[in-house]
Image (cartoon, rainbow, N blue to C red; front, top):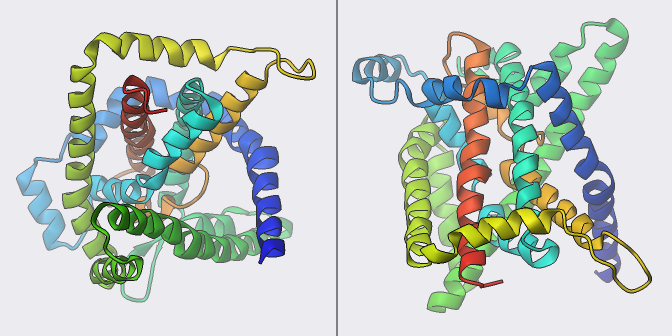
Length: 340
């Protein structure tokens, strides 16, 4: 078992610390430049696209009658996947390991990640299709297999699509769900002394009741639960900030100052503090909002929008809510109460 753990840690460390921590921000920067900073220039349009028709009763009634999934519902499903352990325990871990400055680099990763997820959502919409039951389906497996027009690259596209499909099932179906359910079970066990197995079975049953209904039931459930979850969590964080309001300014000042702080350590190495802040901040941002991971385009592909770019705008708001609001709320609470 120890040998297996060492192999997993080696693979994880190589992928996270030597490949993805550089590759994903690089891709985000490329999309940011190529698309002319959509996360900044198009942010007002993204807000309007996401929330503008939320309270249009007539349009919502027509959509439900037709069995369509709205742009906001698709976003809610995506956020349901994005918001979780990484937004709470993950942020605290990043601060512990990389210092308060890690939060700045988490924001930086989210900013370029907004451009990445814009591209992911647009591609998911462009290359989506319908299954045998008439439901819209799409995502990286579809745009990888269909997006390579060159015949010589077509085989590569199909291989990458198959590899992604298998990898994402393992990553989300096993690793991701086990991490989330383990966190839930551990917290409830510590707080109420309820056996871990009982909590695990309960989580599986409640999740199954939603999943078995397919994407439409998942979307309807997420549309109801996700806004409440986010509002309650951020609202409680605001209450803590109000209680410690005299320290809010110093907390943000600490985040920015520590992000670029370098200090000498044993052996004469310089910049270890900054390096660790970047490492844990970027990796936490990538794990939390999942930009570039390919886990959210499946949800964005199901939305009924007039143009793929509309869902791309909505996708950017998902990263903003996940990292810009929820993760930031966690970070400020941790730092302002000196829990770290």
